[in-house]
Image (tube, rainbow over all chains, first blue to last red; front, side, top):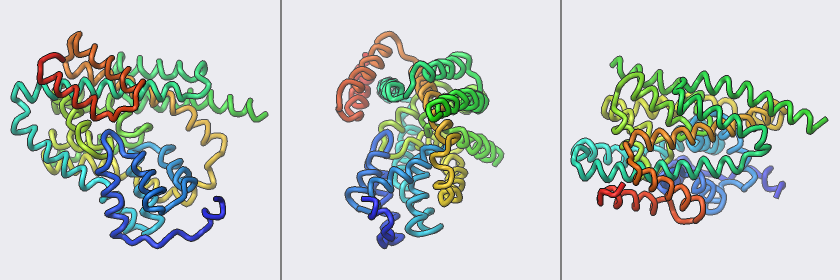
Length: 189
Length: 173
């Protein structure tokens, strides 16, 4: 497997990047990352699973929409600046067009009581799905006694006190990152 | 024009603290768009989130819809670009150096430290979406049911969304 990583990347045209990422963008609801992995690693075979994880690592480490960042990284690898732009554009163009059509419908019919009732139900489902996602992510956190208190503090600061997020995140990263740094240093000593 | 500029600067700024992606940013989007700028009311915000949930595509699309609501097509494109472009440039320039700092202790410490914060943000977003949708007891009961169902089973999330649409139309939620 490690031999494959050193292999030159397969030739991928700009058109293939655009259409590949269009397909990824349109294939998932509420996030397309699993589809990106499936398409890039299994169906198109543009990269190995290790390469995918390695590239995703940076995209998840940095802030911003992870999948857009991934499109930029993959596009850049195969097509330089043009590849990066076309991949990100391909990823977003289709979904943006669909969502704008829905926005037109919302402008036209959103005030109807039926539409209001239906959207309230969907928002409730969306809220439930978010709780489930947060719960799954909380279970995956390592060293829970050290880190779950930070989850609670962020919830209090953001959801209850309504403090601005940039300040909360910067303070949070400083504190929680310091705890993590200390734990890592202790582990490796 | 000045609204577009405001949209761009607000969202570009937020993209730098969007650890956990656009989903983790929901509570701050709500604060900026509903509470600070009064660009829309809470119910509309919840509706836009609902529309984004029911459409295919990356999570960042809720930002596109917010931009649309604020300033039409130009607003939609501006908001989307503002959210995606800054970190795209950073990731483009940084990628060839990733090997050099990947695995360094400070890098792993940040990664480890950010995760619990992102979880807190998503719990907050879940709460705010429910609150701004104006749910009653039955509504919150349905939220709880979806949360449990989605945690315990492998059904596609669209089933929950369809159930929400039907129950909403029926006047239950």
